[in-house]
Image 1 (tube, rainbow, N blue to C red):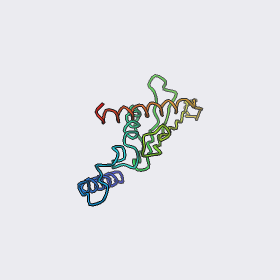
Image 2 (cartoon, helix red, strand yellow):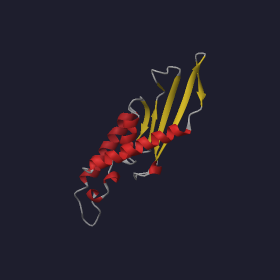
Image 3 (tube, helix red, strand yellow):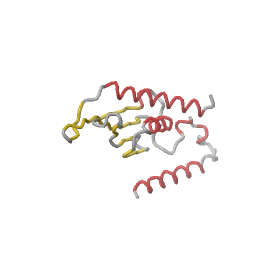
Image 4 (spheres, rainbow, N blue to C red):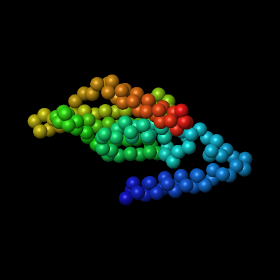
Length: 146
C-alpha cells in the first residue's frame, strides 16, 4: 500500500511538473534542463535504469528512487546452491559520473544447514559498478540518438 501511494505521489508530481513546462515567463523551462536532470526520480535516470537492468536476474527486495537505493533479495546461483549473494546499489548524484554509484555485496555460504556470512572479493562490487556505469552511458548515448 505504501508503494502504491509513493508511486501515485511521484506520478502526480511528474504530471504537475510536465504541465509547467510550457510556461516561460522569465523562468527556465523544464525543456532547457539537461536530459539526465529531468526525471521524476531523485537520482540520475540513466544510472537508475542501468542498475535495475544489471540486477534484473535477481529479485528486488526494496527500492527508493528518491534516495537512490536498490536492495536485492538473497540470490542463489543454481549452479552453486550452497552460496548466496545480496546486492545493494546506491546512486549518490544526479550527474552521470564514475563516483556517482556505489555497490555493496554480501555473501553467505550454507554450512550444516545454516547460512554463514563470508568474505566477498573487493573487485566484485567494483565490477558491478563498472557494468552499471557502462550501461548508463549506453542508455544515454541511445537516448541521444547515437
